[in-house]
Image 1 (tube, helix red, strand yellow):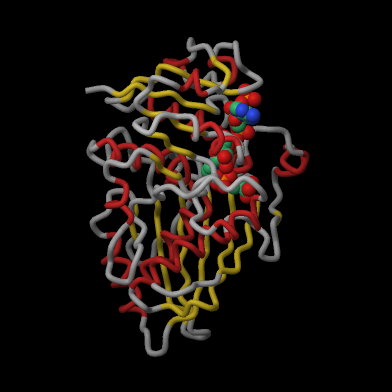
Image 2: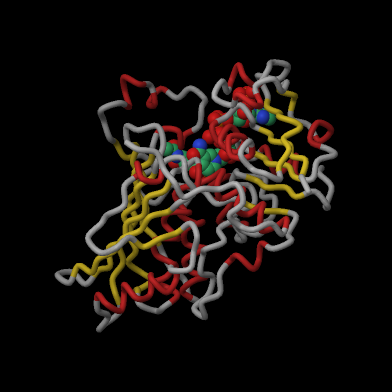
Length: 349
Ligand SMILES: NC(=O)C1=CN([C@@H]2O[C@H](COP(=O)(O)OP(=O)(O)OC[C@H]3O[C@@H](n4cnc5c(N)ncnc54)[C@H](OP(=O)(O)O)[C@@H]3O)[C@@H](O)[C@H]2O)C=CC1
Ligand SMILES: CC(=O)N[C@@H](CCC(=O)OP(=O)(O)O)C(=O)O
């Protein structure tokens, strides 16, 4: 059985990666691609790497152009997907790569995004531990017709720390997360600080001081895992690479927690997961190993000097951090094997 699919924001980085993965998905048939300023042009002009889909004409993003498909992916700027999603039939599976439907707390959404809260949808991170009893988000995605795909930083941060919170091993009030992202995380539109001359051979922080919009999303997920409020200090940095996120997340361990107990919690959480793995001791995550794949690599250590767990996680921001996670959720929603059309193999060198 194959499913008809429309992808909006098809000429952007997130939409383009959704299309690259759909082109290799055995059950998906991409019928429609939509965007905005490139409407009326062949997709191949904006996305020459998508050879098998290059002939499709990009259409304007409207409820009419997206109608009549089994699955619609929205990869639009923040604020644009809430409005269009409200016009799509309830029976259509709508998967939003943007932030419009990620947060359950309206006040938090408005604080970071402004007006236009559109309600929350099932959160598309199947491996996320959602309570101290070991339940995962996966079950909440089976058969749904709406999915909010997580932000790329929150994907890595929550995968990094949720096992420790669910197991009661980490203190909730002293969590520090620093992450480096490849430049594609900022999207395709022109931004002066992302010009090659500014961003190559250089690293710099941005969104410093508790102002990045991914903070409430991280706190929402980690609080669920912990069963009590978790507060997060988060600092993003830009790294001179096209793709990839390397997150370093640290938290104080509860009194008496040792290294073996920490390791066992992460092993228990992820040993049976197809796309999230704790590396063997002594090996550390690298963005290169996960490039182009739906894989998240983790490693951890106990810094006994300061009593902190240090957890690192590498993902591809466009794959597991967006499009891969979106397709994994699509598979669950449609009742397909969760791994269909996805890979754990990265690119080397
Ligand atoms: N880049 C990333 O790593 C991640 C991105 N996301 C999310 O995915 C979404 C898209 O991001 P990204 O691909 O990076 O952005 P891009 O800037 O690369 O692409 C934006 C896309 O949206 C289209 N577009 C712009 N304005 C409108 C509009 N008013 N109506 C319809 N279409 C419009 C553009 O079309 P055109 O070019 O024709 O104007 C383009 O196809 C965002 O919500 C982002 O938060 C989520 C996780 C990670
Ligand atoms: C490098 C960079 O600029 N990254 C983006 C995050 C991209 C992403 O995943 O987030 P959304 O889906 O919430 O847009 C940022 O910090 O705003």
